[in-house]
Image 1: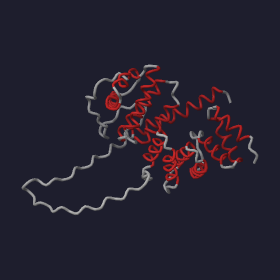
Image 2: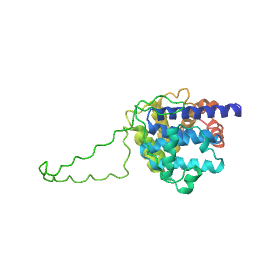
Image 3: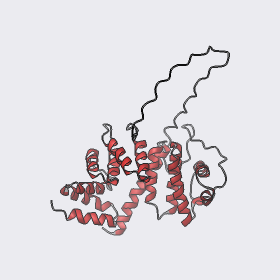
Image 4: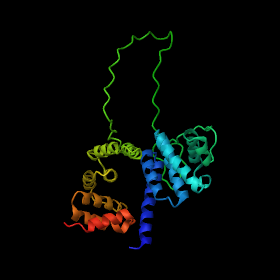
Length: 304
């Protein structure tokens, strides 16, 4: 296969990932949107404008989840890109999205960092997450289907002189904290985002624990199983990755890149014939990097 075809296939993969992220953003599924858009941005490092658009939406998604550390991470990637080629002020962003990015930047970045994005001073515009009655102005996305979580109600207060005083009730003993708390498996996207943050922070054991817990969930869907399998591959739990890929079932159209991760996991666990099969299925769709070449040599040369 020619290098041009490999590059085109790789670009298609990141474009599809980008579109999924934008669709999830429009549907207010911010956990999925953040994970997909940030991953898609890695494929756009040579296309600065699209890289910055993806990071801008990832920043907003993280902020709406209350994950300011992730929002700052996306902002810092914008800042780094601006140091090389200033594009942020000219990229095509809806007005409400740009306003929110600028407000978050004013809140989370230093003055020097924010200045590189053309942002100065504290945010003066209140950031409002759109509701289902206010359609977000998001290019190339589906209509929003859901809204933000409703705010929790405040505790009721007894009006002075209008209600009798209520005797104080004995407090229940505080729950005993559990070591290394794991995410609720019921919310797969939040758990996956937690695992990604653990990887970014260098806490590989924490990430591995999250992925392993997710892999045992009885409600694991095909798409989530693939993402869990990739995560286990990234933290070098090849046995766990192989099991997760097997549980995910057939790798379909548009998912061909997963064949490579499955091939490596199978090779590292001694299943050479199956590894060769998965590698052959992956090669027409992936970029042949030095790492791919190294594993290709190992897998194709393995004695069954």
